[in-house]
Image (cartoon, rainbow, N blue to C red):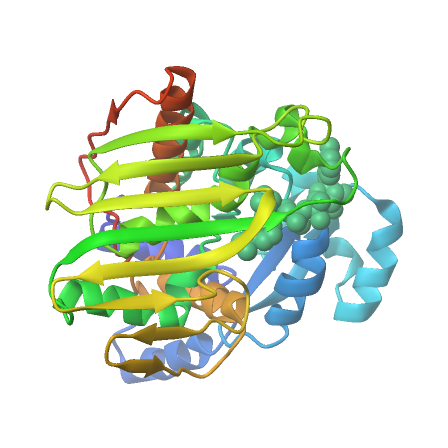
Length: 378
Ligand code: NAD
């Protein structure tokens, strides 16, 4: 992610809290700055479907550095219910058509795009053009080209861009990253990750419609498995080979049902993933030089659970979404690391595209070459 100069950072920070610059040098200014530091950033959720309704909005009632300030919805009936429940003023409610007016609204600092995948790029770019910091849900977009367009729009507008990769803020995942970084069990030799669930509901849902989702299990749950093999080794893969399996073509008419893929890493480690909309599995397992570690489940909301060859992992369970949105707000307010930058979302989309390419070529090994290491996220 582009490193902002101090001047840019001041400007961004000022933008972040409704025009009040937080950095200050005189004692009075410092005291005022401290008071302003306590101010929370306003978040507008775009798309009020199940993830916004049941995870993000409740989490925003609990966040320390940001709060639910606005909504953007294509369903007028939701406006009053949300306004009443969360005390959202009328002037902070937008629809998809008048959304760009959000540029004039100083109460909104962050736009969080929680729409079907085909709409991510459009709304992230419009949010950036409106001068708002952006959180983009996973998968970042429909393809790498759209990821680039989002990243470039945010760079041009000098706004911060984060992915909705909640696990980077979550203690079990952070512990896995620590094992890898500190080689607690020695080097990782093999990593395996499954992220899958069995879908039986409405066959007309957008996730099973390629025009809206960009793909099936791989675009949805597969992104978690890709993330797992990367933070579970601390490396970006150098190649991938993949296979697709179909057992319910009547239901999965348009999108992939089950995909497996195998990765090679520069260290010599190997990895494999399974993702599916027809199988239930949620696990990360790493075999290391001197032991092993495992999360099972590895990417559900809560509670995660984990074990290692030395014993059980036990961390407090908190809303991952709360931790994630606070981490992003802290990135804006205090220049703390961006745990899941847009470039990380783009890298994962490059891997998704390579997996689809391998499948199209009958499982051929596709080489991957990443210039930057976004393996750890902060
Ligand atoms: P959902 O189907 O519950 O909600 C989608 C929302 O988009 C609805 O409010 C719907 O009205 C709106 N919408 C606008 N145009 C639409 C169209 N043409 N078709 C269908 N809906 C349309 O979906 P969701 O589960 O809330 O997922 C939204 C996004 O969040 C997706 O990108 C998904 O991958 C992501 N997500 C992430 C997590 C996570 O843990 N990070 C979890 C769930 C979903």
